[in-house]
Image 1: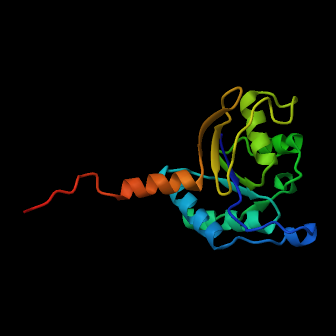
Image 2: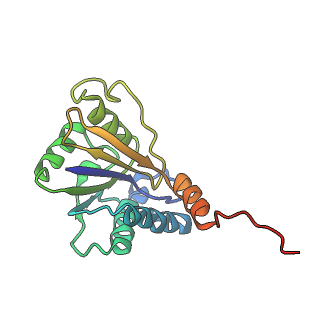
Image 3: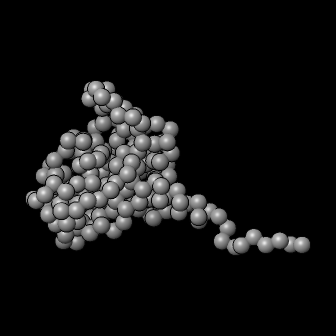
Length: 181
């Protein structure tokens, strides 16, 4: 299975009241990040069988924008395991439920997503919360992990900043401009 872990896109400034923060949606920049990252996934020919999102609004919106842009027509599933306070053991159980699928995209939050990635690829699922390493997953970033390897293997990690740089360099002409005087 290829596991794609995506941090929700930009949702502006966190609210101090946890009840209000749960309802915080994406800002304009966050919606643009979703479109950009969905086009990156499409460009990489990523095939996703299941999309699972945190129940928080910003993660659900991220999942929906990406799914729509990729042409994914299945319902998006919600799981409290992907909420900011999700536990690694519960995350492992969630992933095990879909181990027969080829591509699974999960959309959640830091700090648990970067901890989940570090623990998966270090093979240290029961040890230190960071798995003995640290992975930076910016808002809107996506990591691809090959779960068939033991320990799981990080294939790539792309964030919106890198995607914008690549996109702008690819869209420019590769031929130098010359004067025709």
